[in-house]
Image (tube, rainbow, N blue to C red; front, side, top):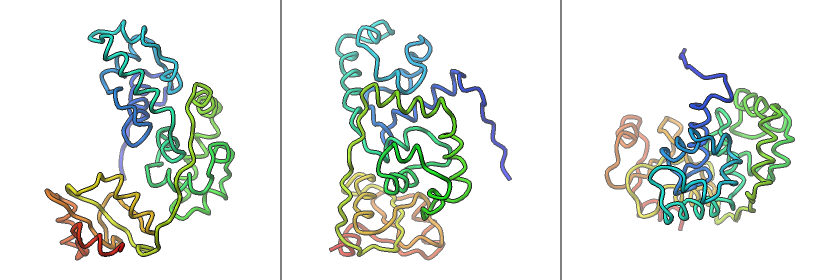
Length: 246
């Protein structure tokens, strides 16, 4: 019931820019010093055309851009280098496969454990994953069946990106079967809280629904808290959440 305009041209500059902006974002490859304006400049100057080009950039090339001095150029290079070591979940999310958000990327990483196994995955393997339906599986396979897409994955790795093993240790099953939505300002960063929930067997979701078990609310909580109250979903503060996992 929705209309969406999507550019089908894989070499369209606007499409390349948006893909790169997602790739470098905090929850993806987390290239802190590479922002949207820099991506625009790098693409406009023809210095990068895809993800893998980012890891071939030299300081001398960045210095040729407007408003880039010695120190800022060095910071950009160091930020790119720091992003070379990542996790499988972050890497899959960074690739920008349609319908594959952070949570789905984690499910895929937990199932396949390596990029090689993920690239070679079959439809039946995807559909065995709780949380991956036919539409998501089809989108993943459409991407993996594109020779250029797989070639780019291999080139990123060839250019120095290392996928490290994640700490998959489980602390407890105290939150097993429970779904949390986080809102407001809390003592830990949101991604740290999500990891904590998962290590105790729970799941973190982005929106409140009747299926939500708890809303974890901090200061300045907004519409998600209002939605929780409307639906009668139990709201926890930080202390109450801590008691659940003790």
